[in-house]
Length: 449
Ligand code: FCB
Image (cartoon, rainbow, N blue to C red):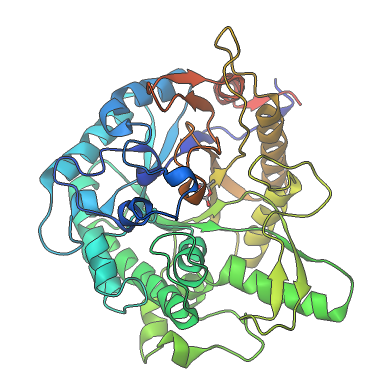
C-alpha cells in the first residue's frame, strides 16, 4: 500500500477555464466577453497575446477528454462561457453554445469522469459590462437567469456546480486594481461589485435548487492562510482583518448572512449600496466549500489608508523556493487552510478546486518534459491534504491547476501551469512527467513519499 493513502472514492481531477483554453472566441454565435475586449485592447496583456485561439479546446475537446481518461482522472472542473450561451447576457440563448457544453459533458460521462462545472470564470458578456458590470445591482438577477438556463440544459447530467470562480480575485483585479478585465480602478465600484456577487450567489443558488434540490452547489473561493509578519499587536489585528477579507468576504455572507469584520472603520455599507433585505438574499447553505489555493500570506499593518489598513504578501513568504509565477512553494498552506475551514465552518465537505504551479520546463530532444519541480509540488501539497483528512477534514476531491498549459490572463502564454504541455502553434499536447506521476497516484489512490 502506498504510504500516503486517500479515502476510497476520492476524486483526482484537473481544472481549466473557458477563456483560458477554448479559443473560438467568435465562432458559432458566441458573443463578446470582457476578456475578448480587454485582450483586443493594446497594452493590457504581455506581448499583446489573447485567448482568441488558446488551446483550441473548442475543437479538440474529445481529444482532451481522452487524455484525461488516459491519466486516470475521475473529475474535471471546467467553466462555461456565459456569452457563448447567452451572447448579450440577457434574453436570447445561443443553442450552439449549449450544444458544445452538452457534448463535452456527454464525452466526460462516457469516460467515467465527473463533470464539475463553474458557471462564471470571469468572462462576463461585454454587453453587461457596458450596462455597468458587477457594480450594478441588476446583474445579480441576470446571473440568476443565466444559472437557470444552464441548470435546465445540463442539470439532467451535471450535479456538482460552482457559481463563481474566485470572487475576490475578479472583483479586486477587475474593478479595483484594473489589471484584469474590465480594467477599472475605482474603490466604490469594487465594493459594490463584491456585494452584487454575494447577492448573485444567494439568488442563483436558490434558483438552481428550485430546479433540482439534489444539486450540490458552491463557489471556488481563493484562500490563503494568513499569519502576522511580526509579533506586534498591530500586525496581529491586521492579520485578522486581512483574513476576513481574503478568506471570508464571500463565504460568511452565504453561510451566515453577514459580512465579516474586515475594515477598521466598520462595514462600508453605504459605499457598497447595501439595502434592506440584501443580507437575507445573500444566504446560501453551500453544499461544500471549494478551495483554490496557491500559497500562504504574511500580513502587516499599514497606515496609508488602504481599505483595511493591512497588507498581505501576494506571493507568500520569504522562506520557500519560488515558482516561475513568483509564488512561494509552501505545502503546509493548503493543509492549514483546509483545517481552518473545517474548524470555523462546522466541518463542511471540502473540494480542492485549484492548486498548482508554473514552471516553464519544455520538451527535450526526445520530446520528454521532465518537470521534477512540479512533481515535488504536487507530492508535497497532496501529502498535506492527506494529513488534513487524517485530522478529520472531509475533503472529497483535488483538482490540479491545470490540465494543460493555457492563457494565463495578464501574463499571456509565458506562464505554464499544465500537467500537459501545449504547443500553442500546432496545438500538440504532450503529458509532462508530472502528468504521469499524477496519473499513477490517481490509479493507486495514493503515492510513496
Ligand atoms: C487562479 C485562477 C486560474 C488560474 C490560476 C493560476 O487565480 O482561478 O484561472 O489563472 O490562478
